[in-house]
Image (cartoon, rainbow, N blue to C red; front, side, top):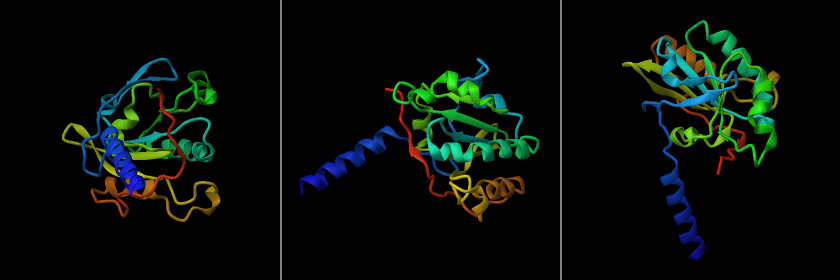
Length: 193
């Protein structure tokens, strides 16, 4: 009985602290430091059809598996109106390689932002990587898809379903994605304290 009460209390606390976005919700704006030392806001992307927001980091093996795929996604879809924005929510004290100087070394062709403001909580991101596909609608961004990039975290050659690409292509055609959400697989977020 005590275990059940504690479990219920933990669920209540976690639901209070995380505002998990759902498909159709308006995505909250943010303003975070990019690795080029410039501040970047979601609202800076108002001329785009959509944005791919990926919560990721440096130390997580799953995030590392997806680095090349994130680069390829940005290369393929930025010109089609869906650029990638990567956000690192992890505490660099807990994981040194998630520190800002290590983020700079990644030299991505897209923004890689330091989330020292808890933006991941507003989105409800729990893993690295955790994807939020946003589409431009009524002068703001609405969530169109949440979850994983594809169905093979460890081995790109084994990918059968490219969830994110399927969702982007559906949104571009004015359709609902085949999958509105999938399970994000990766390391748990280690937030700033």
